[in-house]
Amino acid sequence: MKDFDAVVFDMDGLIFDSERAGYECWSEVMKPFGFADILPLYREVIGCSRVRVEKVVGEYCGQDFPFDTFAEKVHEIYTARYGGGKMPIKPGAREILTFLKEQNRKTAIASSSEKRVVADLLSAADLLQFFDEIISGDMVERSKPEPDIFLKACRVLGTAPERTYAVEDSYNGIRAAHRAGLRPIMVPDMLPATDEMRSLAEDIETDLYGVIAYISGKENK
Image (cartoon, rainbow, N blue to C red; front, side, top):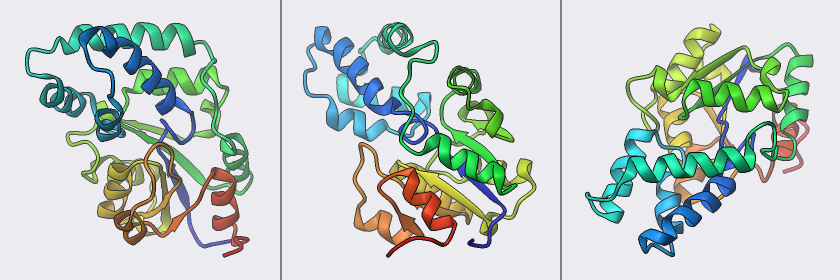
């Protein structure tokens, strides 16, 4: 077993397969506005706060783009399609959380989403009880890639950053964790690992089963 006290997780694209779900909803809502290929836009906002998302969408679609109307429609479709516990859980998510609970390691979520959204998703999937703390984007002044959310997670957990893993799928998440002095592990989802990510992350795994192997010291590298 590697020497650590806690693990801080992102949520979207890591615990839940919600990034692909979100992309489907975005694509559906964007088409009537005349935007067919939005994958580059969507990839740019992965892991960002609502404020940052609105700014990027405005730059991409034009400042007169009705962002609030767009966001409301996306939320409506997203909730109807994936609410009430229908959001797919990523492979290995329940297993790594069970493993950490059995090992008495502290855990937290550090998500750019609002706290009520995070809590509702985790509760519906019967995963809420695995987390000691939830730190959300509306609880910090600056969002990822700034380190605020991870520094706050360590403060509320009572752990030192250098003894805390941060498991992320997004570039901004890995950047934020590295800046905060945590030990980043990347599990790529819609964003592939780049040379920058390989330089910032302590480890890169294809799924959460690989993360279990790595932090337990059983990786085969």
